[in-house]
Image 1 (tube, helix red, strand yellow):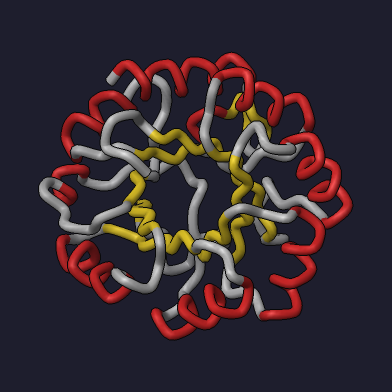
Image 2 (image 1 turned 60 degrees about the vertical axis):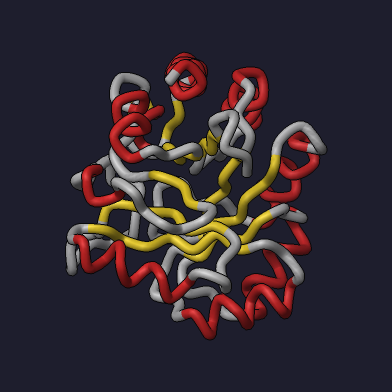
Length: 215
């Protein structure tokens, strides 16, 4: 990641149409969810199809939640991702194991509700390639993200992590303000570009990318 241009990730893509929309809009990363409890979950066959469509036009990110090595291997074989995103309760040692085993850069999601959560993310520095700050889910939440909930962006003012992304409750209307408050140079969106839960909206994808790039 550079500090010159905003990096934009559209997560939870599940159809050729919305993947094409992300590419056409100029997004840098396409996120694909491999978690059966999520409305954005895709199977391995769909992953193969979408991976081929993405080709070299956009970086592919495979999002998993506390997946074991066998599951990760199946996903890597099907999608050929450029990044693995660990969105569960993986500890730094597990992140290091995944990175070493698969030889891919790792994005580690960290839930944020308090300043202590931001401080705890330091344990992943030097292990994860990118730290993704997301809204902390409720204790009884079925999925660890993608709920369209924002956290107090002021908690990230002056955050020291070298490479990090902002996620959680972003949409075309608020992404510019979020980037200004936090100083984020990379943003991730899922529910904020949907017309209904789990279904992306082509126009919103384009609007989000444009808003992030103009911030």
